[in-house]
Image (cartoon, rainbow, N blue to C red; front, side, top):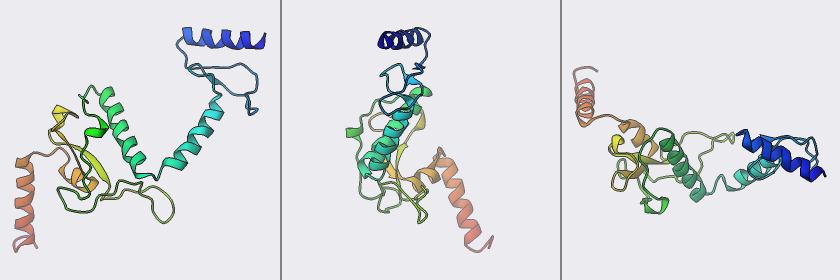
Amino acid sequence: MSTLLNNHARELSRKEGKDRYFTGKPCKRGHIAERYTSNTICTQCGKEVYRIRDRENYRNPDNTFFRQFHHRRQEAEKENIPFTINFDELDRPEFCPVLGVKLNYACSTGTDGKQQRDPNKASIDKVIPELGYIPGNVFVISWRANKLKSNMSINELEKILDYMKRTRHGKGI
């Protein structure tokens, strides 16, 4: 009888477009929490499973870069940016083609164990941002090179270079 009520609550929540439902009954681990309509897993159990899985895989270089790739795909879909490349199509060089530094594909953590920005972290770059993530327009470069490049034009880059040459070689300093 309780299974029937649980299924009814789940179906009712689905029809209402909700992703969770509440039964008031404990799950296998004893949590009295909402459950996901997609798979009936208790939300508390789901958080614990994801936390354990992420902790185990977080420092795996392949998984870290793979997650970055999929995050980019999700963001592109939200912003209607073309995304037609597959993860396997990405060339993953050992060294940054812009700055020549050894690329870090792993998670970057400081001495305190907290995540920090590594300038040599591998980053996905769109050469022409308007074209999106399509073959021939996407390369892996260091985070620093990508940040420096950002979305500036060649003309803007030349102006910055001219300014740096003027101010560092006798006139400004």
